[in-house]
Image (tube, rainbow, N blue to C red; front, side, top):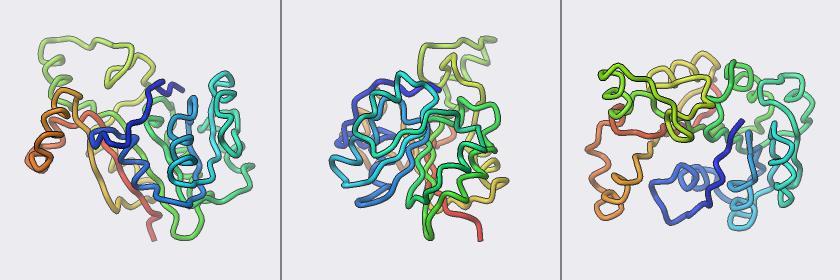
Length: 216
């Protein structure tokens, strides 16, 4: 699965990585699913004093996660691999991963057995109902791009409603939600952050983020 090689700026409030890092908090045992080259985990170790285990299907990317406590090479859809991890975690982060999976229900159900008491699952996914995608469809197009919402490596597509339905089927409850917007709009929100609450997320969200706990 793909993890973009971007640096993480914790001062950028319109970054999914910033939101996820703040939700993780300090001194947590973290499972970073689809950890890529370790961008998020390295920040969590260096600035939040977290212990990081990663799962990454790309062995070349996994070798770049030298700062992690442990990296497991394999697919997040391999329930046998998940069952063999043998640890529990305070936080599981699944950032921009579910859209790359054929069966995201597999890890979403397996994560229940990997959470410590009072643990949380954090996820982010692109919003296929963004107004630019709607406009593209109205013009009769479905054009892939190298990255972003229409990334050519995406296998699944989510709206806010379909994402909530998916996590509910897998027995997760959303305790908090947030969204990011396009970089251009994000620059305006940086100047006037209060405007964000007036934006309809289903139209303007580039990514949706959920902070989940197991359904009792």
